[in-house]
Length: 131
Image (cartoon, rainbow, N blue to C red; front, side, top):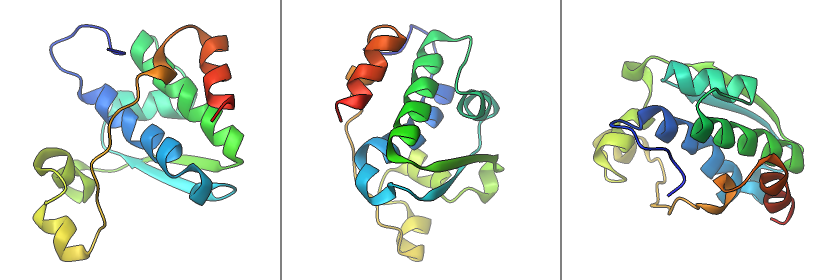
């Protein structure tokens, strides 16, 4: 798969959420101002910088920045405490999370694409451009 071997992948998973939003809902998000609330400091830092020393997170951060530029989105990343993050329950309990249902949040399962992470920066840029 696209991530390097490690015992825990929470930072990579947290960084995948904004990328999936940009990939799956790109046309709806085109030209909009976006605010992504992230409750994981390494993921937040990578998203804000557009890079990371960890290669798998670096590729995700590149993909986020490239896709946002392609869509003409202005993106802001902000930290949120896990206790205040309504999406935290969804990440643990799935799309049937009680709070999400109570608030009427529409959720759906998505498959994580592997393509954007493979290859170097030029290959990633080319795949994003082809979307």
